[in-house]
Image (cartoon, rainbow, N blue to C red; front, side, top):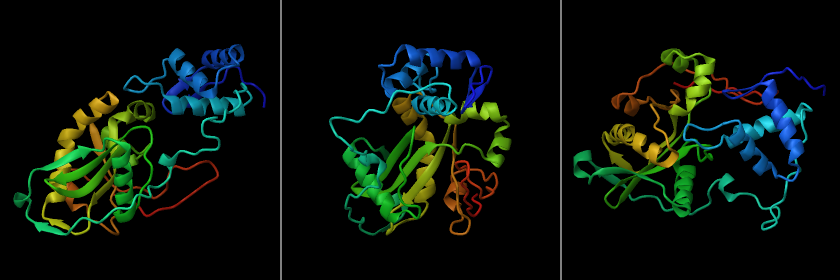
Length: 281
């Protein structure tokens, strides 16, 4: 492919000018002994390509480097096999297989419960348990979060009541983006400050009136400090999706969330791929 010396590249919210491309090309040639991981972290550092928490935007940079290679701008070092675990794949990428027992049925009023708390998942064993419970009981099952996330257990005294997952926001939503009032460039630059509540599960058999909205209110008050502690910055907005063919979203409305509209049902997918879903609210 012919090299385009004056081309401008975009990766997410980052504009990569011709000078940046020339620097990357020169750097790759000058240090052929670096692994792809070392190369990517170094390019992030030199281009000051960082997350809101000040960490390298590794995945975005890695995608850019791969695109530049495909376009003939450079040749990346060959992938290195992990000699400690040849052919090993990360188990975290797979749905959890931990065996779990369902919680005993619980029928009480909210006032009869001990204080309800949201507890961050803190270690690998708890993470596997959380994954398994969501895979078993949530209509959408388990899906590995990426980049930033926070898993919570919902607890009261000795009872485990449910699970919540927060992660990255949807890349583009017409109703949300119009409500905020940002343009495409502003959206890409500020999207990390919006979190998506992608999983919310009250376990089967837990029947406590107003529990779901109570937990959402607590989440809104707590997540800022939790996110600041874990990821180094404080989000300002929460979003979620509700399938109106199955749910009414009553607990979200009761917790003060605002209905902004309905999605088109068209998802963001790779070129050449397409899928259609029912519109979500």
